[in-house]
Every structure is written in C-alpha cells, then in structure tokens.
Length: 117
Image (cartoon, rainbow, N blue to C red; front, top):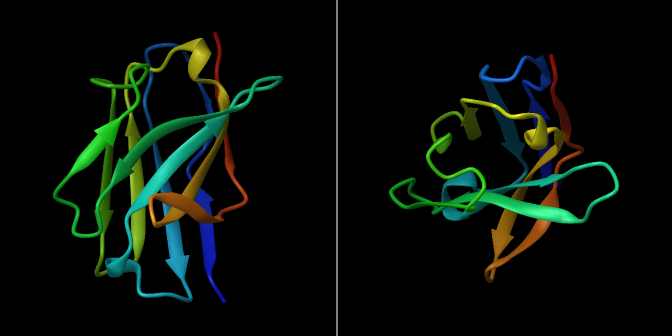
C-alpha cells in the first residue's frame, strides 16, 4: 500500500523558515518523481515544486522560486521542502504527491503551514 506522510508544518512568523518532510512507503521511492502541492483556504490547489526521481532536477512555481528548495533522500525514502522567507500568502495545507505519467497519483494527508505575526 502506497503511503505518504507529511510532517514539519506549524505556525511561523513572516520571514521565518520551516522544513517539511514526506515519508514514503509501499513503493520504490527512488523510481518516481515527486511533487509538493498546497491549498490555501478557499482556493484551489497550487503546484509548488517537483523533483525528478534521482534528485538532480528540481522545478518551482513562480510564487516560491528562490525561497523554497525541494530535495529528497532516496536512501531514507523521504522528500523534503525547505521553505525560507515565508510570507502570509504561503499559508496553506501542504501535500506531497507521487508523480506517475506527469500527474500526481497518490497524495499524503497534508501538513498545515500558517504564516502569521
């Protein structure tokens, strides 16, 4: 059974940092591209970042580029999202997702990030 479990969310002041983790199990993690998607209250899902299976190539949405860094540790079956210079508009539920044929096919339960003073 494919499982994705996010952690690391919380409340942080503007300008602060958080590191999200996504622990994967039930599939060969190193064979799949992965992504992060977020959903703010009252809004649709927003793609945040993606990384290829080997971790060499990373892609970012315009709103987070230069502030967020995606990475993965295939030995630990874990995906990460380092978020710096956080803004109130980054407040959202953050999901990790497995990518298959360029689309997310499995999602975690999400971890809440709240940026507020």
